[in-house]
Amino acid sequence: MVLAAGRGERMRPLTDHTPKPLLSVRGQALMRWHLQALAKAGVSRVVINTAWLGEQIPQALGETLHGPDGSEQQLRYSHEGQDFGHALETAGGILRALPLLDEVFWVAAGDVFAPDFDFPAQALARFKASTRLAHLWLVPNPEHNPAGDFGLSQDGLALNLPKGHAERRYTFSTLALYRREFFTQPDA
Image (cartoon, rainbow, N blue to C red; front, side, top):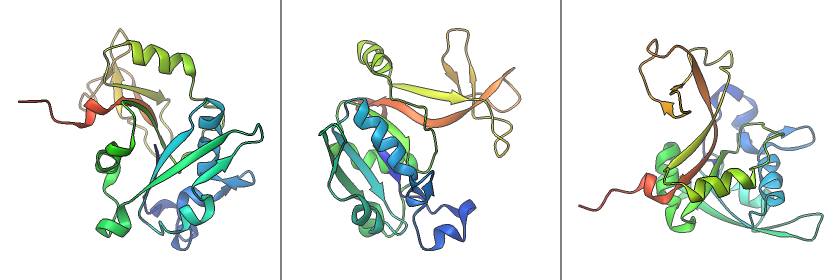
């Protein structure tokens, strides 16, 4: 799933008329970097959520992307703006798109530039073989988030401790693997 519903406030006025994931970086739309990397990793179906200026995204991308190697990537859309009048935020957008997603799925923010992230097959295989519900990629803290989002346990698990309670904190990159179960209520 590629998240593409946000307003892009920090990029105004550029995002007043163009959704942030469609802003050009190094000659192509931000979200195309993720879509190309997902295609190279063998992901042939991608769900994209939309809200702010959301009609522009399917207009720009269509329903099928063709790779230089002849591969095809099917795009499906979850139109939050059209259906609700606004974005549902990250978890709400994923929850709404669950019927379109596989049991295990990648999530990437369409407005984040990570050209070297290749959606590694070995990470996907390890995650599928585990019982974990989520695998998050954390990065060193950028200037706009100096306190970070998560600490790390000794065995590499993200710790959602209050700021100041972890010796070292990291920022969530918005790149992750999830199981559907992470977003659903446990059976009573």
